[in-house]
Image (tube, rainbow, N blue to C red; front, side, top):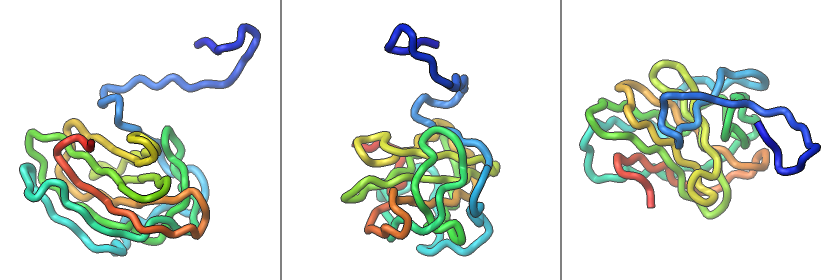
Length: 167
């Protein structure tokens, strides 16, 4: 590990993964109110199978909440409504990657609970928009939360589901 300044020292974490470099795998909840993966999603459930059309599928949501994202890891930040996911996605996998991303007029964050119970976060992967790329997505239920940087700073956003990389 090196720093830009010759005498500077800082704590750092090196992560080694078999996942695509744009994946931001997170740890388990560490503090604060844990996201409730069993709650009914605020904006419903989308069921998709590999090769779905139209692509992308878009769900309009009100991003944000009063609960700090309690998941630790790269890209895990912002405020969400931990009581309920914004969207559930029941996905039947095939040979395509799956992209989950957000488009909004201001900076947002993204938190997803994968079918195996692990967490993935993203912040600013494409400009100020979060993007999660799953190169080999498993079949199952994905719980999706969209966060904002201020507690209670709700804003309009779109959750995009695609098998094609966002432009």
